[in-house]
Image (cartoon, rainbow, N blue to C red; front, side, top):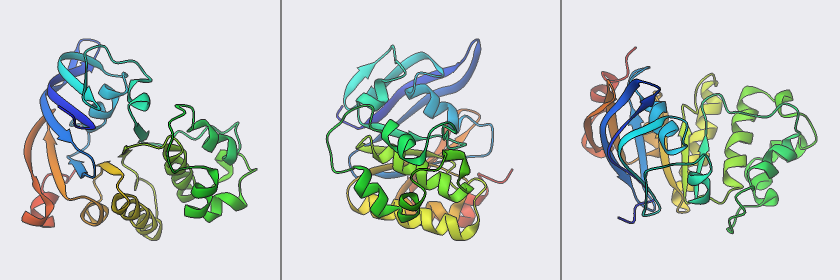
Length: 232
């Protein structure tokens, strides 16, 4: 199995609580995939499982074709998987530049550098020496994406990137993700904003109560059909 990320009958959770039940999916190079579902169905636990935050109870997680049973917090980053977490995780005591440089910690070679991130997000150039928490919500999301790109990932994972953003900023995020996808970066988008989903991804998996209950190509379904799965 040579997928960038694959779950094989994964059961995972926290402590004695089992959240994911038999989850299987794979993301290959160049894929753009969405995980959809209502709040509380286990979407973020998928991310936490391959980051080593949630406990893998059974099944296997494959990172770049390597099968893991004991996942460390650095395993995904070393395998070329960078994550933009829900809430963005900007470190307020570091400047914008320092937050970006932190993303390069895995020391993977590739096209992304400070210069290229600044070209993608010019506003970060202007605010490079400001504290990370001095940015607006939209600018912090740009910083979070830029920091992830500094790891030169093969797969970029985003957990609810539109949360709390104005529609015009969501549009900017969509354009950036479209560009990254066109340039060959695989995308895993965990999202409830279908206007963002339809512009970025090509396939989807719907989660309900910790199980995949539907999957398919976005081109073969309608937004109305998907909407029923994410109404809170």
